[in-house]
Image 1 (cartoon, rainbow, N blue to C red):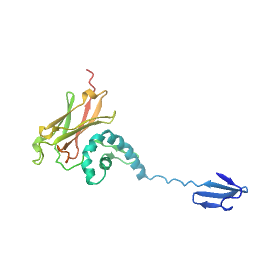
Image 2 (image 1 turned 90 degrees about the horizontal axis):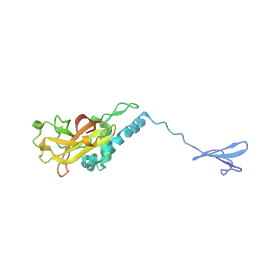
Image 3 (image 1 turned 180 degrees about the vertical axis):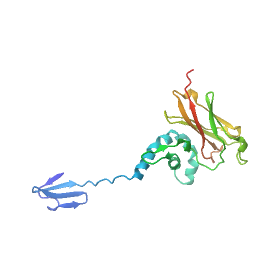
Image 4 (image 1 turned 60 degrees about the horizontal axis):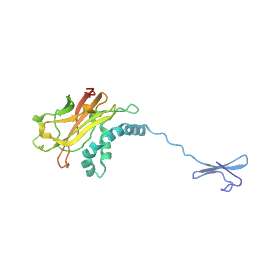
Length: 218
């Protein structure tokens, strides 16, 4: 606030741009005008909350979505993270504000047109998470050299284990070593996708279920 003897606006009062002038007790006073912030709508609040929920998950699986969404992003002239966010904003945010939550069974770490498998499931086999699917239902256009993307995600505490490539679709199973990484019991959400050897095609993500893994105290 400024008090001016003569007033730089010639003794006038009122609002000019961001400045308000008026006379009080014979003195010309000048103040900056603060525009009141418009109250956020429910839609805006819901969008912010969705971003708050999704961001830690996507950052945790960043190295997988970088591979899994790069082709889709290139088609749309965007970047892999923005494309992964767009997919997952619709896929995993459930409920209505202020009671939104994540349905991690719908998490997408890949997006593509390569044929998916049927009856995908994961289970604990010794120190490994073992992924299997129905080989009898495999389509003829699938290629023997297609490789696996395997991801296991635990939300609390946040633990992510995964692998891109190396294991082949034609084997009919894939493995992730998990037990030796554990310090506490985790409920892992498990995901699988197929990717070509040259990385020029990828499938959508397949959910393989939840698996409880306890630490190896031996």
